[in-house]
Length: 406
Image (tube, rainbow, N blue to C red):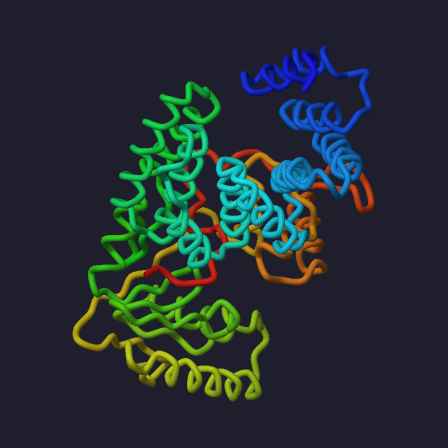
């Protein structure tokens, strides 16, 4: 390694991207391209960084597998920062295996953490937790240990295990302090602050109460029948009935829960579930069908009985009924929660994270843009979407998750 490459590498390790570029900006050999790519990534110039890292990987050639694998890992981190989630995980896994085979343990662990962070963006909490459990923290340097503990805290927060999250954040703070990386310390501080912000609203008996994450956790553990409007489902104790893909049933369940212990008029249910102001016998027939489906699905948790003017929800075992509502409502709530991280997202990445079609995402983004809640940059395939941070509350319960709270 020549002196300029060594000097650039030291500058990057210290976070001095401009200083590194002064040493290698005019060079076009593979090591210089790789260092230039990392420097551009540190400066936030992600498309240029990605191009440089790809060129470096090609120039290293088949005989320099270790250097090529490091370039692949660096490019994967840039893709994560760009919120490009379309890449194949197998490419990163192959690079990880190459690093481990050549005893580059630190970069191999870094690659595994990138894979974990990608799983978190996709809401695959169980897979992320399993991958974290397989990491050997003994070999993690302080900066990577801080990242690992932040990932563990996010898994715990989004699974509503707040005690585990607080413990992970304490370990993350200690590692970030030892690493002396201000950005990591700031990220830990922001995650700790999220624990103290409202995460949802409790609606019962006509009252509304903001809840922090630990209070939501306590509510779900209380045994009450919770109609969860954050994750769209019914929960009582350990029993969970998802309704995210059955919006009519969820709307009916929420209407009945908000009126509990009173009943709800049939006309009100029809208007809310079917958005029908001018009602006829076909709407009443459809209501009977949908109530029958909801009655069957909710049977272990509650009875839905007909009353003189409509229907009433009666929980089993004398449970209370509570609606857990998100801080912000509407079709775009989860989109806003994802965009609140301050990064620029493509429609394809948003669709992949939320598990819906790109066309649905595009329609929602257009509506949010008209409302002034999001803005776009670029055009065509380069178009990306941004939104300001959601002030005053934490969006944890609006982020995607493939599993209900456990």
